Image (tube, rainbow, N blue to C red; front, side, top):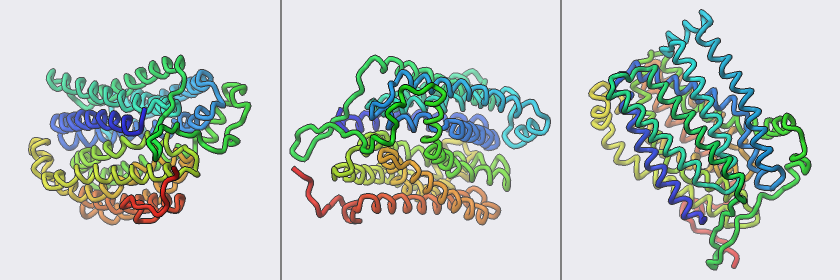
Amino acid sequence: MSLVSAGTRIFAGRVGQVAANAAVVVLVAQRLGPAGQGHYSLTVAVTLLAASLLGGGMGLAAVPALRQGRVRPQRLMRAQFLWMAAMSLVFGAAAQVAVSGDAAAAWFAAHLGWTPEVGRLAAAGAFGMMGFEIFTYNLLARGRLVVGSAINGWRAFGHLLLVAALLVAGRLTLTTAVAAFAVAQVGGLVAIIIVALRDLRRAPASLVTAGADGVPVAAALPVGNGDVPADLDQRPLWRLVAFNLRHGALGQLSAVAYFLLLRLDQGLLEHFRGATEVGLYSLAVYVGELLWLLPGALTPLLVHSSAADASDPRRDRTAARAVRMGVGLTLAGALPLFLLAVPLLELAGGGQYAASGPALRALLPGIVAFAPGVVLAGDFIGRGRPHWNTQASVVTVIINVGVALALIPRHGAVGAAWASTIAYACGSAIMLWRFRRATGMSLRGLVLGRHRRPLPL
């Protein structure tokens, strides 16, 4: 499958996913109101954090081992299932503590609106998200670039159907909204496991790209086979799990830092201004972040293509072209959204979310500014440098928290939006600097695609 073909199919799936996710956000926001929407958004944030923390890099660490053929996918999946079984006990225990301990239950009820049922459903949703990410990396490593995005699209559509059915039946509450979310995540996990197991019977796909003369060139395996032990496939499962933890945990911290970058401001907003203000802000955030699904369609392609031989200039130019495309797509969506932000959110929220419009307008410049970072995250993983993502995310979180503490107490949701915009711009600048330093690419080559060195024939 060519990069263009794979990218087109992933992009088509992302457009459908954007539409379904937007519809879910609108339906939940309308029915629950700003306070209920705030509790729902914070609950989803907690599930994201739990999934990121307990993923352990099980999928991320599998990419080089599978690409280099150092471990059979069957054994790798058995090790991953072992990890997931252990984490299911952790999720269950954490949920029990959150809903049964007097102090913990009172805190979650006051700040997130939880009942015992909501806590258990959130744990199930987090488990589904964690497993989905793990097995998506397996498929990416074997060249199945489109499968994860396709299942993501169907998962979003199924989530929309569940929420719509609850709304029509008059039963859409915080508990049932979280239940629909959990069912969608677990359903996505079941689907990705079925696909991954069926894929074991097939040979790994070979991503084919076009050379300068139009002759197909197979994507090269990553260099540095010594990074993966030759005896990895013979190790006991628990040692395979330990290897994945040791090599994937640092990269997994990027997902944790990225979550904090996206959602920590909502926690600060709840602390200073309450759940209603979080509800107003979260609607603006959800609508704005939907635009990132468009450049995000390029991320899985770069996870694969950027693992090519470092001596091939096509690798770096493909990544730079993806950055330009990602920014263009995001900007094309952000401009009309900026103009229509206030009337659109007033209409979507039934008049309850008029205050969300200014927050969305303050957030959109940052959404566009961070589009290169969304794309380059896949490039850094493909290069075997996921810790670059972690470093950029940590710096961005620090900036976000500092500015948010200064702006949120006085300006509420709009202050949180401006804090995010400033942080996103700084984070993107760090990632672009890192990319240029690693590739030696000129600013003209990155922005305009004009390179001094011609491609080899």
